Length: 580
Figure 1: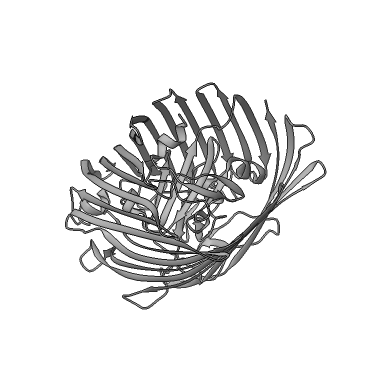
Figure 2 (figure 1 turned 90 degrees about the vertical axis):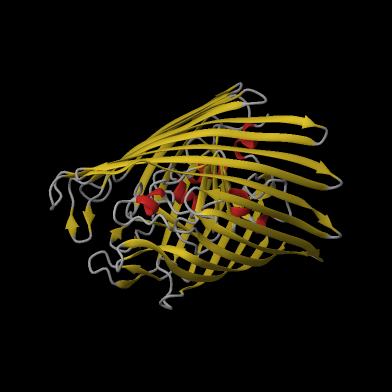
């Protein structure tokens, strides 16, 4: 059994960032490879190794329409605005299990390491018809475990700003292990970050078991104009999952997974101007999902069910805020994939029930058809984000009457060889915002996002180029202003070039001018555009040993991804990779 298939509980074929392989995030049934470039982007283990990318946020920002903005140096909180959607509208999956903040929603991409990952997949568009809450702008799926036969790899690196990194990956038989340790001192006092990440999985044939755990700590050097030399946060999270796959009969299969995620977030500042402050948040989430699939007469039919139960405890120096507050939900979904004449059809619908707001139904329909050398694609669907435990029940500001945030999306795209072009429109209703008049969370926000995206990817042997460009036009319905932190123009490009015994890999990231909130005055302010260039050169003369050097922010650009938080300057690092 391919363990990664069981983890995610769906299968699909997608053209890779460079090349072809199986992508499992785009649907419950395989999608034709010629359609795949319209649906998502993929970074393989080889891509991550060649570019020496250690952070998931750095990897995701190199995919189409993925705007990642970080509050300062590496390791700090990073938000993803996928196709201009909210930062908590991108669902993060690790081995098919949802990972997010049960307390106040969303996921932090800033403290996840790429070590132990086999690949990263980013699909764009509404996916609540398959994955439920938070899959509004799309899904980011991380797959752990090492593919291929037995062997191992050791990476060691050091560089400026106190960078020290080491990771070990090994696969033998049915067992896969990975452990990584990453440390940085940052640019300022109390700007450090340290992270430990461990992955272990065992493939037992019809079933398996996987553990993904991380433990990190970081300093917070300032808050607006206030220097905070003792402010610290730390987080621990571990997910244990058990996937199962079995045949039910001719043409029938069943895939299922059960998982439990436990986490703790700690905050403290002994030097706070209001006196010593400290808080602890403990979360637990049980998750189960099963999908039955039948193939007949050229069609693949899938039907499944899902359930989850979340618990949150939160306390601070002022006392207990939440004491075992819970939310729970269940879902049933179905999908049909096949052809009607020359057109390919993918139709799905999902019904979700939630302990706080009742139920919601979200459909999705995609149609593709060839037109000479082109392939056209149409897709429409709805999606939602459920209110978090904190938004529902936090003392004084929580609102138990909150309804889910909702979206309606439509897109049209085409592929012409290596070129992909897509236009899209997203309308958001009932966005949850904090209302200072009532001092409670309310379903008060409405927004619109119109956009276009284009990608050109080509490969000649190991030489490969990938160009991505996104245009956004956003509007808050309440004020008419552009949405915060959404640039009109953004893009990325990468080039991999072998030359004799060397491999050159370079990537550029551009984020245009955007509106933000001034951290001191709290007024709307414009944040300047920035461009960042990275370059990696590796010596590949020996198959088992590869020394390398990397320059991050090669041109030493001075910028703030989030207003008020200086980003990393130029940094040089060097390392070695040993394989056996």
